[in-house]
Each structure stands twice: as C-alpha cells, then as structure tokens.
Image 1 (spheres, rainbow, N blue to C red):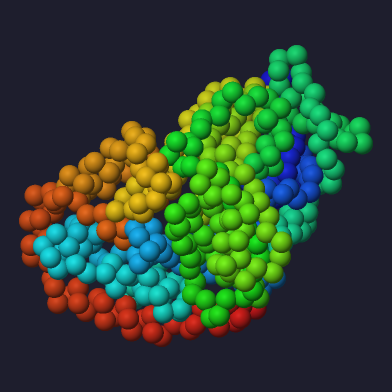
Image 2: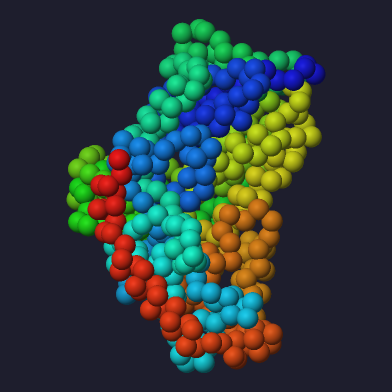
Length: 494
C-alpha cells in the first residue's frame, strides 16, 4: 500500500490512549484521518494516581483544555516538584523543583557558585535561592506570572492527578472532539502477508481494520506482545524495583504542592495530595521484601481507605517501539518506575514524535527508523536520571541499595557524572528531558559535590556579587510569603 494512511486504531483505555487520540485529532483536524479507540477497560496494572511534569500543561493547552476546569472536576492539585526524604540516610532530605536556581553570575551557572561555597567550607541551602522551593517548603502556591519581576516567572509546575477522574475527563473531551470508540476486549490480531497487522479481532467477532495501530495499553502491551518480545532492553540490573503497591488514602492536612518520597531499605514510599483525598504507594524489590510486608508498610505510612492494588514492574524499553505498522506509546514502549514523574511525559514524547514523522504511505520504514532512534534516546536519558537518584551522594547502606550501586553504570551516565565530579560541569546530550538545573537540584541536594571547579568557573566566581545574592534570598522569601496556601489556591479554581 503506497497511498497515504487514512485510518489509525488505538488500543487502550488509559489516559495515554485518550491523550494520543485527542492529540492526533487536533494535529490532523484538516485531514480526513479516521480515528478509533478500542477501550478494553481498566487494567489492574493501571496506576491510581500520577504526578506529572510541567510538559503536560502544554498538551492541555494545545487540546484546548482549561486547567481550572480540569482541576475542579478531577480533584487535581498542583505540583512544584518532589521532596525526597531518606535517600542519603534516614535524616536526609532534599527537593527537586521545576524552576530556576539562583541567577547566572558573570555567565557562570548558579549551581557552580553553590558548589564553590560548599568546597570552601561555606555551604548554603540551594532551596533558599528558588521561589518554587521556598513556596513548596512553606506550603504556598501561585501560578507563575510574566512581568517586570523575573522571579515571578522563574518556575513552572506540574499536577497531581487521580487517574480514574483524569481518564474520564480526557475520554469525554476526546469523544466530544469526534473520535469514535468501542468498549470491548481484544481477542486476536490478524496479519497481512507482509507481516503488518491487518485488523484487530474483538471478543464478539467484530474486526477493526486500520492502516496504523497504536498500542496505548500500558504494561499489558496487548498489541505489541503479539508481535514478539525479542526487542526488549532490560534495565533491571540498574533499577531493581519490580513491584508497586498503591492505595487511596485519606486527605493530607494542608499539604504542600509537592510529591513526597521516602526511601526505605528495600525501595521507596510515595504520597500525593488530591483535593479531597490522597494516593500513596510503595515501589520496592521483591528480592528483599514480600508483597504482604509491603502492604503492611504502606498501611503504616498512610491511612489507606481502599484495598491496595499490586502491579509488576519490568523496567526497560523496546528497541523498536515502531514495528511495521504498529507503534507502542507510553508504558507499552518504555517502562520506568514513577520516581521522576515522567509517565505521561513519555506518552507525550511518543505521540508528538509520531505527529512529526507521520508516514506518507503504509510502510513508513524510514520514519520508523528515525522514530525508534529518537524515542530510544529520550528513554535512555530518563533511565539515567532515574538511576542517578540511587547512585549520587552517600546513599543508603542496605543490601538492596548496595546491589544497585555495585552495578557498572550505563556509559552515558558514567561519563556525565565523571565530568561533573572532575570539574563541576553538567553536560547534556540530545533528547534529555531534564536540563542542567534539574541535574543540579539532584546532585547538590544529594550532597554530591565535584572534586574541584574548572579554572574558568573559579576565576569568574571569585568576584561574585555577594550583596546582590543575599538580596535575592530576601526577595524570594518576600514573594513566597505573599502567595496563598496551596490548598486555598486549589479551592479557588472555578
């Protein structure tokens, strides 16, 4: 088939499926592209709640979703970043917020100034130089604003979401946009002579034919697993957590706009605030902790109000998420523990790259090769940033952590950390989601300092305007103090 593709079938009923359907409908609104979603219903592996990166707000804007309406109808709350406790020992704590850190000093990044202060015995808290961090620490929130004061636009934010409510919100929007859907189970797949998928066979015998098929069914990978599992790249040597148990919980008392994680000897616990409740979970290694014990620890951590649900994690990625005329998007293509909040970001990367490389015929071999390269680089960068949480700083001494720290790092991460330790430089490769400031939050927050700073940085920072820097702290404290409480701001969304 050499004619331009006219139809796309999407397998999955999660938020990823509806985001992809809505994005494709919006991108090709002036083209006669037939879209259908095969919704097999909720899977036991689907999350109960999510925390997101700021990029999700971009796709909401493109789709015409009003954020205040979404927050009000789904019970979402805002997210300035994450607060990590216990990752360098039980008494440790640091934050990673989505925003700037300080100001450039004679073109030198502020994180190098903080590193120099620490190396010379005058350490400072990075949080004091970030409006987002101070707001998070004090339970405040307001949306960033453009204007004469650059501090008010120096940060961004994500969201905490109830999965069921958010999924239904997207489903309603996508159906209003004109995307058809079928609620049914996938029973079988038929193939053409060239190995491409011809049709989806439903449990009642109906068939869905299309030119291209998207697998948005999450960890189940209902479509891609029928094409074979040989191309899976396993990350379990570096990321050994293979279970997650989660549950709905009671509302938190005046929560800050942060995702909280608490490291344990076998993994890490998490909890996110929602408008009327919360969601908590435990990501852990079954080698060191049984499921019953994990549930017990989760119940001790948070007041659970629903029966905990368990899912398996198989951390890794497909080498070829675009295989023939099938494209895996989201967790069907890349499976990563939710530490960095990139679940829906991965889905956005997949559908955005597909839109850019949307094929002109039914084969799309050239586009598929480029798609697989780009998504692979994105995935490996997210893997490296996740691994770094376990490998930088002192770290915990338990056997689970020691086993991960004994494994040689991926070359890309080893080279990044080696350069940072040698001279304080943080270098990015292509297709990295997290930028230099994100890495600085992680490295400085975990107590990972370079052995020395480069000559140019030390020379530049020797004349740092100390009084101006001190004034920056005061200005940040004043602005954060003027913000409303986070939950008051949530309740004001109308």
